[in-house]
Length: 212
Image (tube, rainbow, N blue to C red; front, side, top):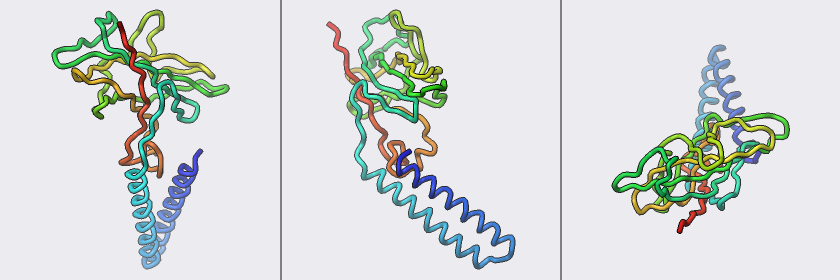
């Protein structure tokens, strides 16, 4: 747990305590005291929001190299590579005029020692070099001898697997990396977090496979 996480938890606890005291003061008829505490609460929340936004806008974007893992507690993900579709029989979405198919390779792993786990809310977008983002055009694929796996599949302790995601990009566009969305609440409200409000999320760079 980071210092930013601890600051958020302490701030959330303080807000809850102030709200509780305000309610009790109002019920007991201490309206002036409730108003004063309400002003304190408003100033605190407003100040926290300002700091959250300023840090989010000022902090540089985080980049990770191909294969470098990004972990959320014990659940980790890494962008490995991407290759352009070459009439892949497994590709479920056909590229039409003005578009081109790409397959991104993602590795999911667990650092847990004893428990099994899964990330039910995880989703991934592909970002091209112009900053445009794309959703997967279909579910994950089966490639070669590797079985089809989904990002949300369960992992055993220390287990890892690869996920193959298909994307349709604008013709001429080339993948830059992947943007991972997972556990966005309360991360949206944590000062300095990569997923905080108005902050550009981290980019997990992809190695581009060149085919002869």
